[in-house]
Length: 167
Image 1 (cartoon, rainbow, N blue to C red):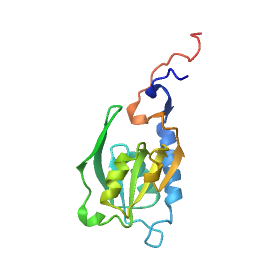
Image 2: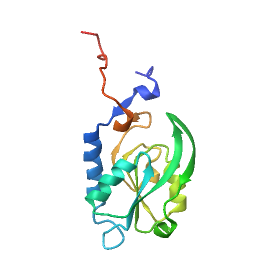
Image 3: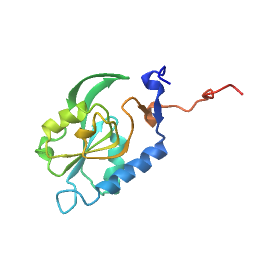
Image 4: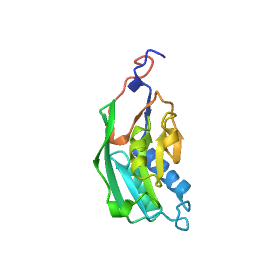
C-alpha cells in the first residue's frame, strides 16, 4: 500500500455525510458561546467552510454570517496562506463571540493565520488532521495526515473500476 500517491488514499465525503457531520458540529457547539451560550456571528473560511458554516448557522439560528477568504492551496499543492478578503472589522474585533468555521484543518497554516488576527474567536472544523489539530477548538472527525479528503463540490458521479479484477 505504500505505493499509493497522496491523493489515492482518499476519504470521499458525500453531500449527505457533510450535512450530517456539519449538523453534529453545530450540536457540539450549541450553548458553548460566550454570551450565555450564544455566538455573535459565524465566519466561514472560503471556500470550503461555506457549506458547513451555512449549516451550523442554520442549526444554531445565527443570522450574522460573514466570510474570510484565504488561499493556501492551488489544486492539491499547498502554498503560503494569504488573506484575500477579510470580514467586517466592526463585527470581528478580537474574535470574541465569533465562530470561525472551515471544512478541514490540514497543516493548520490557514487557521494559524486567521487566529493571529482574531485570537479570541472559536475555531471549528468538520474534519481535522493531526498536524493541524492544535489550531482548532472543536471538530467532528479526525483523519490521518496522509489522507486526501474529496469533498462533494470537487466530485462528479462516474463509473469507477473495482479495486480487484474487472468482473
